[in-house]
Image (cartoon, rainbow, N blue to C red; front, top):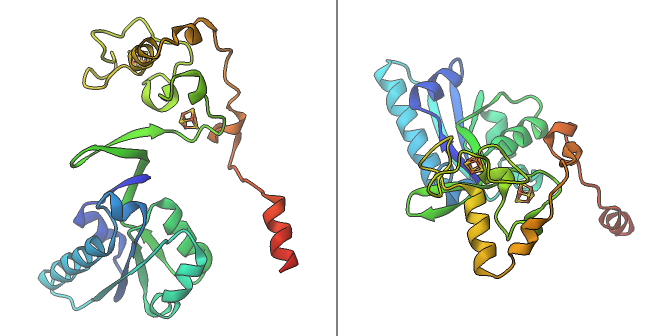
Length: 227
Ligand code: SF4
Ligand code: SF4
């Protein structure tokens, strides 16, 4: 899932300044699961802003609504009227959700209520950890299903570096060394020979470094045209 974190209330107040009618929009998918921007958080954020505005002595209106997914326009169509009535939309979606609203409603001023952090998963109650950096050319088949791009602090393809100590990363001793994890897993599976092959430098063209990316599925486009 995409993992995000809420911005502080003072930043939300600053981002929404100038708008008499603020609409907080939650998203029912990833950010609901990581407790950052679902219906519950949208209602709490709206209530906190109302209270903050009242304490500041102004009567700005704040309402909230949550869609199933902010990153798909068909769900945004369901709130078109509310969006049009708002002076400012405070999106509690990830960065994709914010941009989907801005793109779909070009006349609307939309601001982010979350800091989109990474793609990851919950590892224990209240803890989420990064697992994938969307490099565009997955190498998990070479590393026993543990990603060195996202989980090694140096994104090494042939690790570990010389700083791994006691199974922990030299960059942050609280972080398990990804290459130790890879080594342990391959050892346990009797597949250590996989590591004997030196990996050549990765072609990062498929990653973000090659510029904005796009996937085009001609079969789906043709199917749509034939409908
Ligand atoms: S190798 Fe790339 S695509 Fe695969 S998990 Fe790691 S970052 Fe994600
Ligand atoms: S100690 Fe391990 S995780 Fe940290 S940078 Fe070196 S190889 Fe990567």
